[in-house]
Image (cartoon, rainbow, N blue to C red; front, side, top):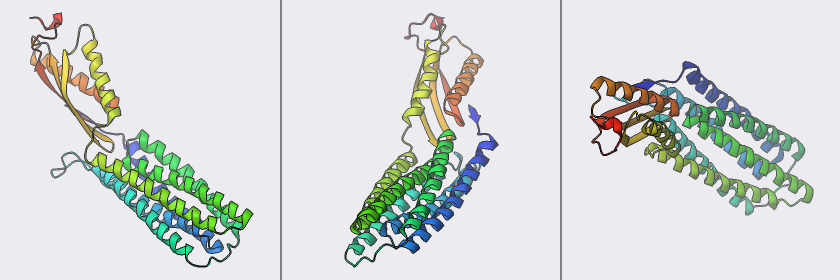
Length: 309
């Protein structure tokens, strides 16, 4: 069995990135909230409400990352990494809930008289500044999260990038209102934004639950099989074949076990040495985690000369 842990630098980087996301959420809410107070726009209200979700989601992600980095213990022998998937699922629920709230508020707004939108120029600049800030931060979180296998940061990054897209939609709608004077466009934009939030939230819930239920990652599977196939195809072959490959991951950590068939004439020490080499190469392919190889004698049906006594 070979175990490999992430560098301390990567762990600290996750915490710093999540802390930055919290700060950006607070700033974004301040900018959009001010824009809504100045203009009274339904669309900006919807965007500002989503920013409250950004704040809560970023705080939850930060807490999940800190908890997930705790070492394995007697009660949690596989570690605490699943906390990141739970965080991402909760964030999806909050995004979808915000979408429902915005939708209800917007539909209610259609039934009442709409006052004119005021100070639209300043409101647009505030919303635009918030969108740019969210876009830059979201892109950074997504890049860092994928690089370091942090489900919480990937979820937070996708949320902020979705926030950028919805903000651009709000700006476009308000520019149309400014040009045409048609206030219904503002409400229609809010309804569209709410629909997008529900869709984004639902997708994030589905992906996070799939990870919590330990669906095998197709990308990881291909990398592991490629590493094992190199040994099967080598001449002379290091192993005759492999089977019973299983793997899962909880955030950054991967757990892999497999059965390796080796020539029956090998000693226990020789078989163990081969297993250790392959375990290390498998972890080279996927990153941090634990790989365990079970050695079994080949029954000779592979036809390789190296399997003959």
